[in-house]
Image (tube, rainbow, N blue to C red; front, side, top):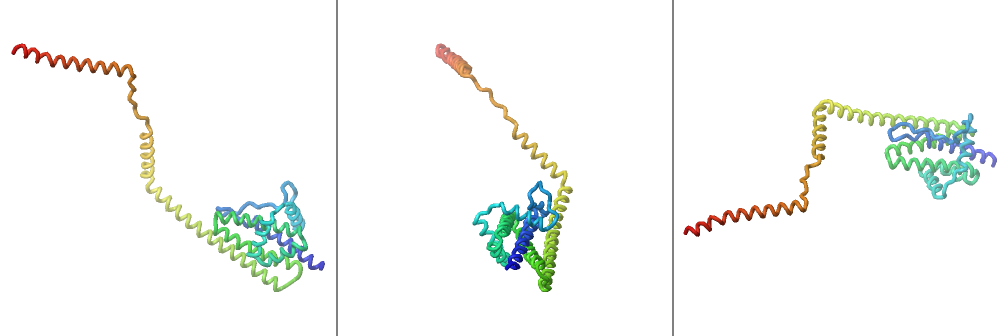
Length: 259
């Protein structure tokens, strides 16, 4: 019984090991660069020198982190879907070592949230990170079992898994290189087109700015006529019209008298 609990404790530590590693160092930013490392040890305190001390500090930090039952269920479902063996381990830890179980679930919850955020931004990168998570999870649990007993078959399996992980990384780097090469080719084409039509492009931009400036100039407005001035002008027009009418009527009167 004691040996069984000891095995579960060691495997629980392994859960924290892979969770911390995958949750921080594996995730990358949108531009393909590595994301800053997320420290599991509170800032301001010295970094423990040994692995056991680091694991203990990590477990202590996570022990005070609260998590809802709903998010716990999501984390467990994530483990069951992507690594069934891990899901069984967590079920045993929940009964035999609640502290380690809680710490592991907290880390899994953090990973689930970060992967979900990544999926909404870059699906291909999310799939790549998830594949690495699965690989790292298997490797770390196998490595933890090797610390409990020498098993040549398990050691051989671990060696194959490590090679698969390296091959996966190699394939991703090649794919990344291909994407960058295509990007460079497009940039070279843009640079060439711009260099060839430099004067033409500059002239078009200048002409567009000039037209915009001219269309924005304020137009000259007619001076409004005051009410008094309008009335005086109307009278002047009437007097002029009357005088013209009188002048036109006189010849007709004279002609009538001559007759």
